[in-house]
Image (cartoon, rainbow, N blue to C red; front, side, top):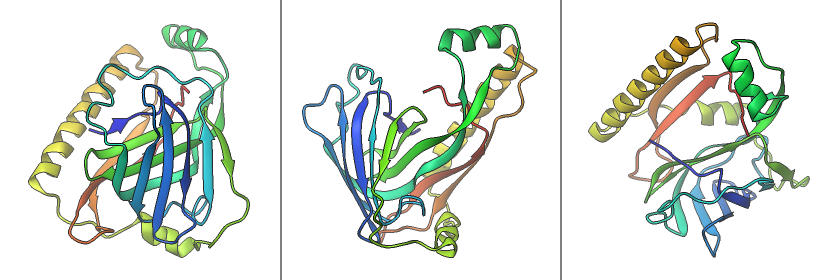
Length: 224
């Protein structure tokens, strides 16, 4: 399972101006100092070669014990980093959205861009920050440019065999997703299927370390 820490984040920045290296700083509620990122790899083409800054307009307090085993310096490899993931953003409040669900009616929405910041930490495994409600600021001057073919190669990195631990994680995660999907359909059978997930190991970007990776093709409902 992934660490998902977008709610308690207050602000952050990621820097991919050096090819093959992503650094950054992330500030969270409940932490006095920022979390520092030192990652191997590159962001997707929309962020590659640039500095991306983001702010959470409505951060929430961290859960009790959330930071007990999360080192202040996160070393590892880049997963997927993009500021242009398309998601469905509701044009209504959360209470109104729940009313639409209870009434089994479609809710008003528009397509929006979502920040998706994923890395594979040596200490914590897969970590994800994902939100369509952040304020984003992208440095207009790119230090280098990633071509379309290079990005495609990065997204389709040749998979390696999963380790036994990764196989166990994969099976557990798929079981949880299937159970969640069955429950959602039982409660609201009119909803379309919303997620297709493929879990695989990517070709390592730092010698000697294989990391699990989940690639998703989904129509997401971004709730902030």
